[in-house]
Image (tube, rainbow, N blue to C red):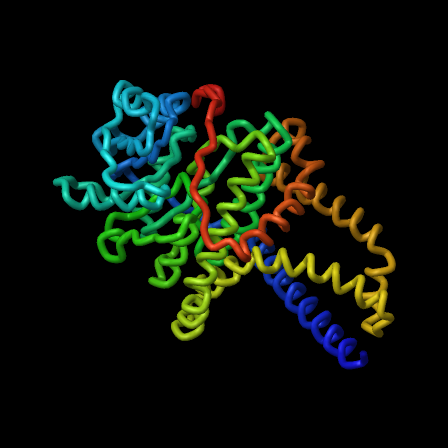
Length: 413
């Protein structure tokens, strides 16, 4: 019995220390968001850009995206819009053509957006063109009219990969879409902006990002997981290609409206993150330490997020066991155990305060985001069972989420 108690005690302290250090790391790095902002200066329009849009049954929204892209303040002669229909059963392709986009045909089996982009880059390499960069969007997006200008500025500043500001076009519709909006606002500010100020790499957020043609030519786009965005960010880290964060290159994204849709999407994200953890974490740590590339270590820690969330649930179980078995541990731990209800309430209010702070810092309407402010903690807690699933599920099918928000750039800007 004493041996069991000793093992539980060691496990209890080890997991608690690990979670504490992990949380402390992200708390300290988030503080750099308050550091003097890294400014990307403005340049004359120079670089020719190919805009790439993967589209699967997006007839309801593709027109508004192309319309917002055609209204860019960037010279018409310096960019072209390409739509890549895949697995479509509606008239997405016809609408895209009518709106003025060029079409790239997909061949073979397409299982993910990564497959679509891989084929698109291959197509671009075989055609005669003078494109110097690619900007990637999802079909449900609306793009601010200064996006391409700011990506041109970023290229002129020496960056070869950049992530824009991911905003939400339907933040006030449901508590789920409101939570997504707050999640991305928090990531924009305390993760991407902080790392930009640290001269580290931001992370790719799936849409509204730019890749220099030279990066594709040199390193390719060889993603194999179902989360091609963060996998590509890992490739960038391993090759010491810094990812800029451009907070005034704005993309408005349509978020899921229901918990069921959100569950499916976040399950895919978590499984993809675990795929990246298994495939890249060791290599990232080794490269980061050996070549002194901090973004490699940062990316490796990022892939640990699902495991850390599951361990937080394990800690609760250990709290109960330690208390029930009368195992002597640090008094601070027992205070938490004995006042678990108060700490849960305190945690909830901290989440509310952080949400309000993010909205204030990002100059967003608190009134329009109240649904998310009071439910974000529930949204984040629901990620724990999702991450538990991701620990044993090695793969999942990509399932599209229906996009229905018929919103124009004029309604958002």
